[in-house]
Structures are given as structure tokens and as C-alpha cells.
Length: 155
Picture 1 (cartoon, rainbow, N blue to C red):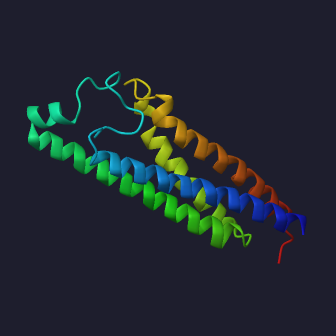
Picture 2 (tube, rainbow, N blue to C red):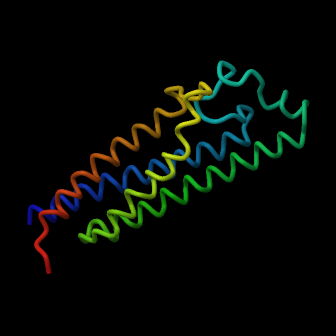
Picture 3 (tube, one colour):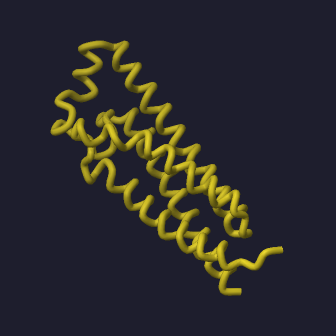
């Protein structure tokens, strides 16, 4: 019973984090269409022009950046949805394959997305803080769930 309790607790934390990923994606998406245009936590301190200046400089560049914002937000939301489903319907039931896939999915996304934030000065707390918080919750949940998986009796 202790193993199932850990699976339940861990999978709920993983689910909460996955929902936060989806929420971050939604903010990312809607900021593209706002006067802010740039991503959450990115200001003139990181990018010295805004929506109007980019649009004035090159409407096609503006449209290209906008399409990237929308595409990235879609992939973040899709990752969150996949991880939510895997966590709730697989990890909670004690499926190791679901845990491995639920963990590997955001790890791959973050491993690709995060490195270029740092040399380019896009590593602001306002930009990466929400993802770091969700990732922290996810890591804790993943660890608790893994303990439950390892304690679960074999069938």
C-alpha cells in the first residue's frame, strides 16, 4: 500500500507540473498577440526593440517570429498534455514505461531549449522561473513516483 501511495502522490505532482507547462504555453501563446509580443520575462533589457519596431523594420520578420512563438507554445502545450496523460494514466498505475516516457519527454525538450538562453541573456527569472518551478515540482513528483515503482511488488 505504501508503494501505491507514493505512486499516487508522485503522479499527482507530475500532473500538476504538466498542467503548469500547459499554462506556460498558453501565456507564451497569448503574449505573441499582445502589445508585449516578446516572451514572458523578456524585456528591452534582453531585446532592444518591441513589437512595433520589429513590424516597422520588417513585416515578414515579424510574421516569422510570430509563427515561431505560436509553434513553440504548441509544442510546450503538447508536451504538457502528453506528460499529464502519461502521469495520470500510466505512472499512477505503476507502469515503468509511462514513467520513463513522462520523464524523458520534458527532459528532451528542456535539454534542447535551455542552453541558448544563457549565452544570449534570455535566462531571466521572469522568463525561466515559471518553468524552473514547474520542473522542480515535476522532479520531486518523478522521484516519489519512482520510489513507488521500485517498491511495487512484481506481478
